Length: 285
Image (cartoon, rainbow, N blue to C red; front, side, top):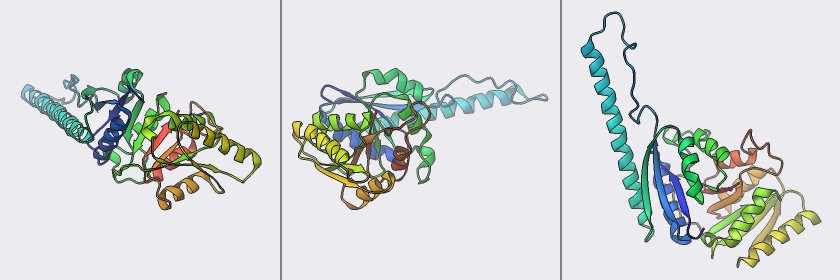
């Protein structure tokens, strides 16, 4: 991602600190700049509200004025909190080296912001869950799902605890997005020097082995000596077990499987992996 820009979306969740460390690590390795963005909801962003119909039956003007004043105070506090989150995030990113970091405080819908800003980004970065779902293990952040559906760029999904990646697992199913994952790892300086394994879930066959050999050859052309594996089982269980028990600290996979329904859902394996995986994930589109 040389001469690239990472669009990182941060909030007040427990994932934001980890996300900023990962973004710093990515930027330092790939000579990328970083755009940290915090999006306030429309109510937080200071939109005017008509309170004239909120209190009826002879409500006093003074009460309406007080309500307006309280709302303005909440908006002011939300903006101050947002700026503090951005400054803290910038400081964390800059711990990883001489990185150009800009900050943006936006109001409105998160997807609108992504649509406006992603053209200049080479990668989007977001925490697995947001403020409202910090400890809801089975709940996948709704904003994450919306972003993965909406963007055409790779999406880095941060887990709760930062650990510098050393060992990368690539999930390969022969689909377009998984082939793009292989090509990206082969060429991108972000992955230089990391231990790489490519896994296909299925039954050993000549065609599967040929696919893996082709993937390994692409990686070899980029300077990686990759290990390849064919493992039986369901993809989510296989990938979960490998990241849990074999020391992998980064998973790279396609956002959609080989037989995806493009416009309706994230691939089911992808959704399950984001929900349950304890390591960060790079989703390729």
